[in-house]
Amino acid sequence: MKELEDRIRREGTIKPGNVLKVDAFLNHQCDVALYDAMGRAWAEHFAGKNITKILTIEASGIGIACVAARHFGDVPVIFAKKAQSINLDGDQYVSTVYSFTKQREFPVIVSRKYLGPDDHVLLIDDFLANGKALHGLIDICEHAGATVEGIGIAIEKGFQGGGDELRSLGYDVDSLAVVDSMDPQNGTIEFRA
Amino acid sequence: MKELEDRIRREGTIKPGNVLKVDAFLNHQCDVALYDAMGRAWAEHFAGKNITKILTIEASGIGIACVAARHFGDVPVIFAKKAQSINLDGDQYVSTVYSFTKQREFPVIVSRKYLGPDDHVLLIDDFLANGKALHGLIDICEHAGATVEGIGIAIEKGFQGGGDELRSLGYDVDSLAVVDSMDPQNGTIEFRA
Image (cartoon, rainbow over all chains, first blue to last red; front, side, top):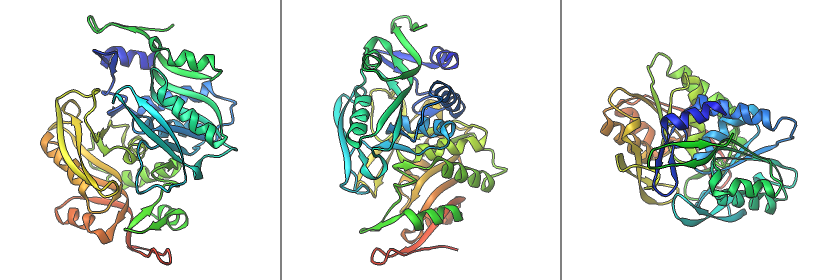
């Protein structure tokens, strides 16, 4: 998606440790018109699939998923929560995710009430690097007996391999920008054609 | 907003400790068509105000704010983050918030790059109870020299007083449903007329 690649080139910054900062428009300050264009792109890619729910993970995925859902007939968006909260019942699907950004493991939970065997799920997230967060969401869908119809990602760090691993497992991964390499020295980013 | 009150009556559940669970449609599973109607209601209420940014707090506020922003000319949404992250620079506005749900204090941070003296800010959140989260966001706007133009809330727990305190301070608080009392014994909820 050229619009997203242009924004990354223009406003993204590369930090040591393979960190690509895009908090000017994607995951701290949010450009909702861009989110809308991303949702439209995923709706085109996944056209013909019977999607009943969108599943994402807090926090950065939520805004993207909610704006995108408007292009999928306003299907419900569920966001997996990262910690136990007194606002949630005990009746939950639980998985564990290692966060690249926070450098620690944490549990992710989804209430059993909102996901079941009849659901056909589109997973959405802002980043795909090694794929740990997505494996947690896939795990939750498997617990629920739900079908993962596809995975919509804003930015895939292709050089970290998580996206290609998911494709080799048969998942339909639609990443709107795939970074094949980035150089913190001179700030250049190469996108997959 | 009748649509929201009806949903709370139909799908909300009252838990001990003054907890109103609305995770069927507001803050775990998200009804984005309802979010859109909420955004339209706030846009009507705050019509004529020159809003340049929407500020919310992770996680539950993000989806609501992003869908609502589409009714405010796609102004940028900023979500305050609840903890230090290696993805954020050191150059941040910081405040502290006590979470009613999590029963502990945590720092909230916003990058200085995205909020400044020229900004006219609409604060949006899912809940307003004692007002601690909003005071944190107001504090951040004061650090930035930004003007708080108004506060859009989905559900205000009127009996906890945070909303009326903010109104007495001069803030224009538009809560779409104000719960004046709720009874965990028989499950009844009274809304402010």
